Image 1 (cartoon, rainbow, N blue to C red):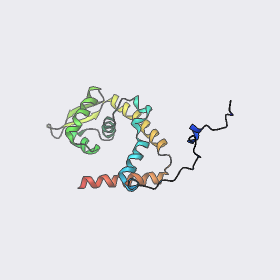
Image 2: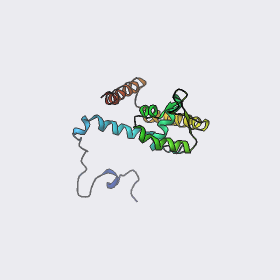
Image 3: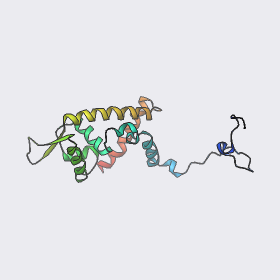
Image 4: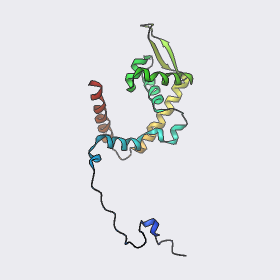
Amino acid sequence: MASSSAASPARTGARAGRSQEPEETLKPSLMHQLIGYHCRRAFVQVEPFSDARMSAFALRPADFAVLSLLSANPGISQKQVAHGIGVAPPNLAPVLERLEARRLLARQRSRRDGRIQTFSLTADGQVLCTLAEEAALRIESEAAGALTDGERKTLLRLLRKLYASDVAA
């Protein structure tokens, strides 16, 4: 049997009858100049919902966004929730219904305007939200470990600037 220190052609990428050539450096394509391309690649790296540690909470990204927003802003309207997470109010209705069915949030009539419903987390919703937020922070911290605190703050500021310009338009 061959020595285990000898690399097989399959492992080195060499093919029978060819000499092993060093891998060429690829020229950057147009993609490398596109912000969206880099945002997508970064998203895949830091997005917590692909991590198994988040599956225990059985939350979709929109569910998590609503819980987190309501944790910080109890008693806000559907329109405010939709604006806060960047979706249209009609698209938010199924998310709210799903969270209400799980008894994670409760609807109330606004004290100022009885025509408006407001939303707050239940005690179970607050507990789940706190645990999910802690897990998401740990996962993102690990995934973005290559950034310093200053770089992370700069990146967040620049990303907010990009999507805030869309809201102003």
